[in-house]
Image (tube, rainbow, N blue to C red):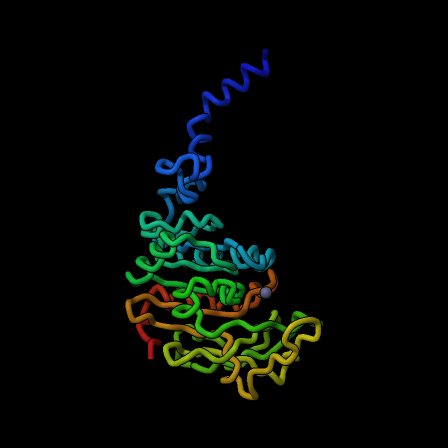
Length: 293
Ligand SMILES: [Zn+2]
């Protein structure tokens, strides 16, 4: 008897939504779509300082657990030091016009795979065209997003091929190739960093500005464990871009950086300087109204 009462109460409470979840064959005209059934969009507090940074790290591909954690903390610290608001989430539902309008910068922190719906992608694209600012970190340029053509072709550019294994993480020299660009401000012309070094199917084309490349003589660009073994892209740092930017014709700016697999990588002062600069430049803060040529 008790069980019957509980069951009845359950259906009294949730019956309507259960009907909505039945297959489309049973409910052809009133079926609730997958999007409508998803969790509601997270809503940042009304007290979030402005300007504000949205840090997004949904993973439908490889999940960089440490890089997401380390990157999120570093991004929040850097944003906080600038007086910016910030909000971290893995909820794709935050990509709606109303919520995105509260943000000035979106950082894809090793967000992998094709995680946004058609409507969410459209909301992002509209937001970006209105002087939106975007930073893509590490896994966010691993080409697992390539089914989203706009993102891959217009924001990322070259396609990821692979990275070294055995050892996976190596110290290598990052060489600044555009010393006058605001995103490179304050960085040494050459600095050592330890990371998982991506190789791509080429360098960014002329729509992008290559900011830094790898000196392949300073590490072993080989993967002896699986897939493509020879990951060399060329003798010169110009042949192996690792950080680049773009000013989009519709408005909006993007910085893409392959750094950031590990938690520790975000402790490096050069990496933090890079992120800080990228925030300022993409958001057109201060006097950094250059760097699009
Ligand atoms: Zn990685």
